[in-house]
Length: 321
Image 1 (cartoon, rainbow, N blue to C red):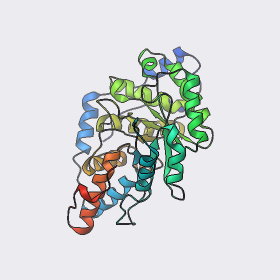
Image 2: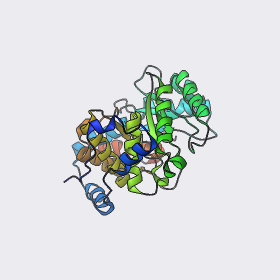
Image 3: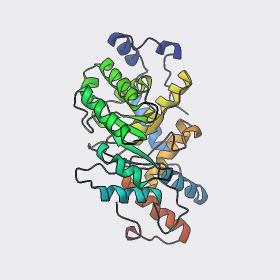
Image 4: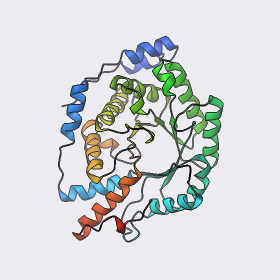
């Protein structure tokens, strides 16, 4: 059973960004979120169990969806090189382990990361637009993006101006996303971060999801991982419903990236069930679904080793990020 999320037909999207008032009318015309129903469905899907062979598949799929991330002021080229090496060979003792989807770094570390993952399928993502607060002038944000793309970033993770969004300045937020998308050019995909923990309501998360997609986001992302409330099954379910409905209305597929707070294999599998049961199998691929959760990778590797050997090796047998 899926929750009703009927949205306006595709032809209605053509002129919704003509003015602040038309965009507001569209976003506030989206169906209200049934909080009880949303959370109950997220909880219900989280109780699904899978068998050993399916679990092995799910673990490898989850590893391939991880954006291995370091976003600290103390980041060094050596740390980024080590992270890149781990992304390419997550388990040095077992070369059958899949690579991660990407490494995610600050713009000044993009060139180092590109060198570290050269010759592999691992992408380099860069946060930009005055991450994590997003409080800067637009020209500064765009310079941030252009620097990262010029250094070789394959993906840009931008943050929206939550202050503008919460003040109802939807057109300002829309125009910023459009400008950042343009700055990405044809070489970099754009992930738009909402910081769902600061949006206060599920209705706002639904509105932000549609706003981001209309503006051209390639991915919509829950969080920066820098606030108290990050990805949850409920807010991710809501965003999965949004991308499903957006594709049904427009024919355009958009990815989803929950980030922050996903630490265990059990957590990851719950999210994969959400994807399968809500958006469908078309999203069960790292081109359309990612985990922004570096600590998750070590647990996935330990559980993978346990399935292969029958023994739980413990954290000392995986590399420390």
